[in-house]
Image (cartoon, rainbow, N blue to C red; front, side, top):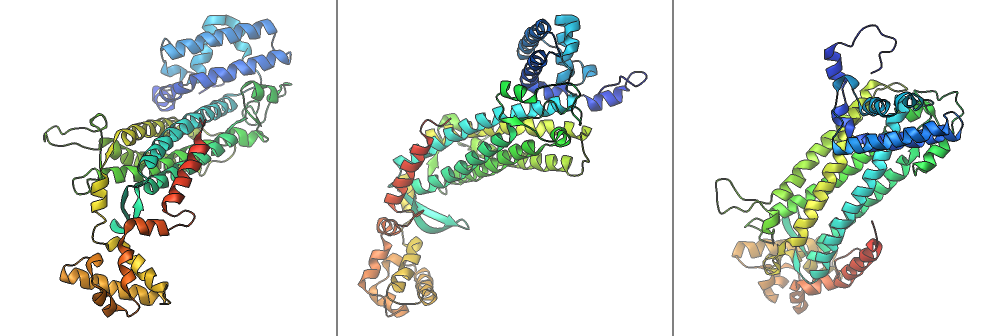
Length: 457
């Protein structure tokens, strides 16, 4: 909040509203890295003496260490991380600090800090995504022969293997990993040199600065560069969608660990107890994953609302992007790592899962398709098996226990072979299509993902 052309001190109420150091101090490393690259470029271009640039870079390194150790005390009058760093640099190197800001503005400086933070965050998120994907794959490999009902509308639907079920989450996280990679690629360009909105008259070398920072290129329009928050929004969106996927996994863990389902038990190290009821074992890790998706969605909406009506170029509204930007990646990585531990250490109950398949109701579609293979239109076959299911429920029988005579009372095309429809292993083996749950298809998918993630970071 520069007041160089204004008379008097800022009102304390404005200062309290404007201060951002409590949030953007987290960007100190990126801010100092950008400043070091900038002053090196200024020296290479002859804008700043080389000796001064070396002194400034050493001073900035000391500032970085002091930020990291907590030695720098925050002063609300200095407002943000950039001013704190610049003021402390001046205390260390004196007048030489005044050379640092040539050829840049606070606007392109903060835009650079955010892009560097996004690049680093994407790398952390990708590592955490891979970690959970590997845990899911390891469990899938162990449970290729573990069968359970797949559900639609939370009603038992058709049999699948636990491996196939877990691979569905690997697919989701794989798409998240792709999205984060794309966010990183678009973020990895330097806005530095765009100035406040219209660049600078100094003969700077923007590409040199970008290369030193490990970025892939430079922005092409100075107005857009200082006001663009697309990469910030994209990162928060990617975090939000990944959080939604983790929420779905969390919901299933909550359900599966209930006595009513009993498919899964969390290790004690990933469960919590009750302050009142000593028998309780709560799946808080999964519930927090579910709840944090709401926070992520709120962060995304708030960020979109901040930028939705801003004219070019920079506006102070953009200060409000820090909390979503800084919070979303941290929260996602924490959740990914916690769920990875929970899934890896959980105990699964194949017998209870298989018990849920008893009675044959989840194989009703197989009986309908049995008729289709004998020339019956599917709708007719569907109706016949539906009547059989209703009859079985009414007389307290299971579908699998109906006699041939009973089956023929619903459609004359049924023969003795209908009994084979109620073998879950046989049903899965026959679902041998790409993307299907047949054992050989599942094994192939596990191998494909293991190969893709080998050496991934």
